[in-house]
Image (cartoon, rainbow, N blue to C red):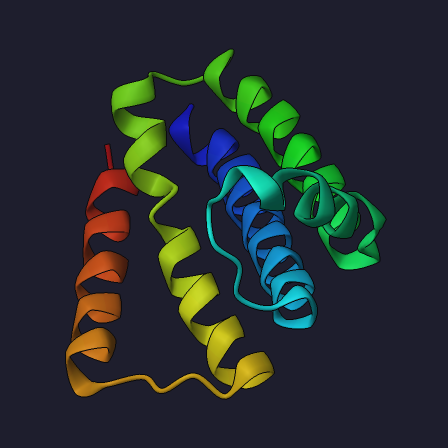
Length: 123
């Protein structure tokens, strides 16, 4: 039964990754801001008028709906650890889209995550 749900988990992790990368793109355009009362309205306006932020939120909500579909079919103790694939997808996406560095330790961590996901999927 778990093998039937793995594609849905991969889809959920992929959608979550797309959402995170879109949110990052939006924040790259908005820039750094501080948490201050006087920033609430100006930053709020920038957030809700950013196409990347709005697309990211939309994709994130869709990924949550897919996650609920997964939870209706699989034990959370098995399904949730498989979402760690998102760490891999995000690291690779950030490397290619934003030019973020992948250290040897990050690559080793990715290999360990892949090993763990494989072991969990054998359940």
